[in-house]
Image (cartoon, rainbow, N blue to C red; front, side, top):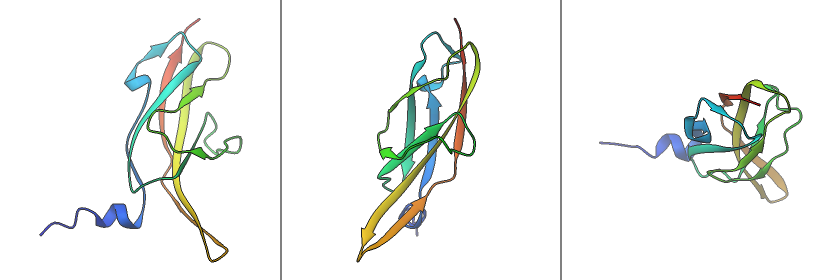
Length: 107
């Protein structure tokens, strides 16, 4: 008796998040945010800030591009998805927990 869809129906779960498919380092500031999400997200946001204050919601993609901040070193990227809808004039929003990954930017 499996109810495997229950969690996905009520919320969003980022089951996988990796920068450049899990690479340890990169020489390019533009990276790919590989992710897998249960629960039909409509938008995502990503930031190097844990509070996401500088992040804009964008149409969801399983492999969006992200621009790392300038300068070499370890970069931590935070990632979150949401399902957003407007119903009878009310905004309905379901947020996933924030997940993170890091990558070293080499000159």
